Length: 256
Image (cartoon, one colour):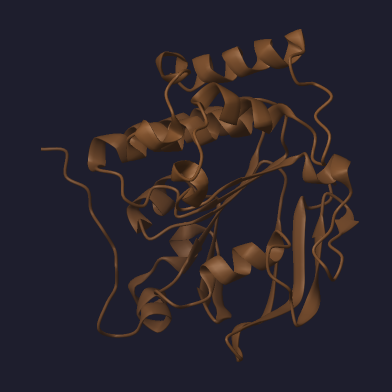
């Protein structure tokens, strides 16, 4: 039996002097799709940041691809290179002029201060193939700051697919997209996941989409309130327990 791609054990994370994530444990099996759901302020983005080593953890352990995340958030470069992250927004896109092609190229380069592949033919070929697979070829010369929300999210998937990865983490990647752009992004993500064999962890508020596409659901409200398959976790009773009696964000899309 294959080892989990990611394991968290007893994870506790503090934000602004309070315990934002409290004693969370779970595992992601290889090539699975796991949705992290819960109300605003429940600690979902904090948990994701701690799993990636972007935030320090108060206690607990994180293991990715058989390697323990150190206390200061480090992993071996060979392991870090197999992780891709799509944040809710790309804050750097307006701070300096970088083209889509240049940005995707950075996804090919190994982690670290040196870029030995820069200008290499294999790198150029991989960038072009990634742009083709995400329908972004016509965007290659545009600046990131010129892209629409839907275009930017597809470009970020180009960044992820430009080299082989094992783990893809998305923090509300569909936020801000209109219905057609969201549907296009979700279908592209599903196709790439199947082709690449990715293990996916994604934060989402779209419970309809979670029910359709996810293998496992983690219901977080500071603590892990529920976990399991969508049919087990997305019941009215469990959703009310997770979100409270006043708001159950179960969104139904209408194509008409």
